[in-house]
Image (cartoon, rainbow, N blue to C red; front, side, top):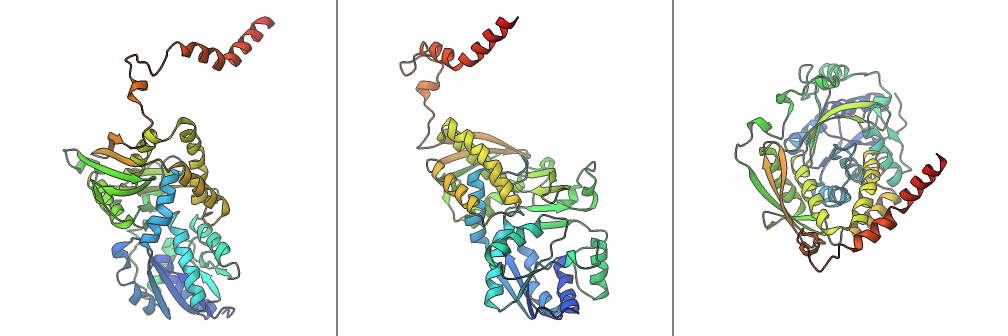
Length: 403
């Protein structure tokens, strides 16, 4: 037994991995365990968590409601940046980790813990996200990562370990999906998804209705923004958490927000997963359309470049860095004009743009109309084309002279 640490703060979800980590830490380190659970919108997954943590050996458990902070300070900044990882993934698990780890560190310090622990595997991204936050906010505290120490090598082994110690778990050999849920999304990995050629089974999905089973009648939703931050749904002003919950309901019943992706993990391997992000899909579509009215060409195009970098940083766990904070400052300044509403038409998994309006629109009918007007002299185009195309003309002349 390693008695190096006396009191360890464990990031606790009550899932398979953290359920067996409490007894494992006690058996191998002989330490007290302070379990720290974050409510980021898992809903029923939090039921019975307190009793389970104490029954499996924790001396204390803290269940922290972080939903408002999560949506306002992590989800919405990432949304404003337009960050999407590898064209599909809306980063639901990625940006949940820094808000959880931040509170983890705060409670660990308050309760006199001398080490931090998490249940992330040694093959995944989450170990990096947790530990980079720990390094940024509590560099003095060592980290225990059981998956990098013990002899358990599979979820089947973990299930056996739990069964031997009579630890209640919600998975089995037949129900083997690894899931992560919060107010933004739910992810599904493992099982038949480990074969990229396998189609996901409908029974796997938990949030959204199948597009085939969604209503035969389209549903319209109007989303309002102020400075690129969502503020209303169908004219009703809402705080961040109820706003996202409402859009989740609307999107889910219309089969919106399902993706199937083979993504590149930070640790170097490819991983196949399926995600359900109904409300987030609506928000991203609406905001992009509003930006098309309010941002000039150069700002819009440069923001796309920035969005890729922002997505990488969130995915890689680099939230608490000067660069990410600086990118936020840039985006916040750039999107000061992005206010207005976007109407979406939802039909069997499809998000169709049905209109967008803004008091700060740069769209000018007198300039855009095919009807000729005084606002734009078409004769000016000839000089513009001559100057803009000069490098191409010079290249062509030089090539011709060589022949």
